[in-house]
Image (cartoon, rainbow, N blue to C red; front, side, top):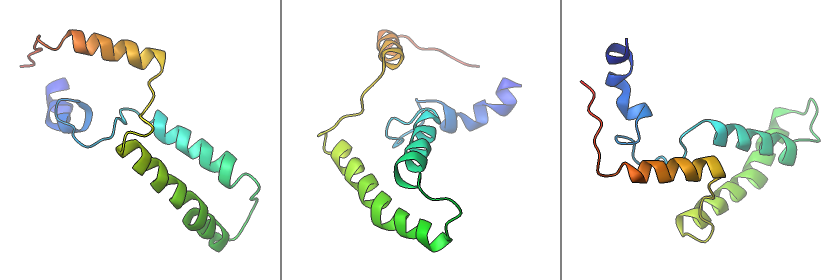
Length: 103
């Protein structure tokens, strides 16, 4: 099952083949962003028209997203890791000279 379902899609799930994902390894980041969107930008909207939502996204959310992206890319505000992520990163770096071979 693993060889049939996961190995052909290794570029989607394995860090070794993924490039340019900007350290987004789970959907937790997306869920967090969605919560910020709902609570920070559109919390007061109840049954508003679509043009109001588009205006908020275009005029308020987009500039903030672009600013955050540029700040991270310029290393002014690097991505902060939580304790579990730091432990996994240390564990992964400890494996740097070892290879795991999947046949």
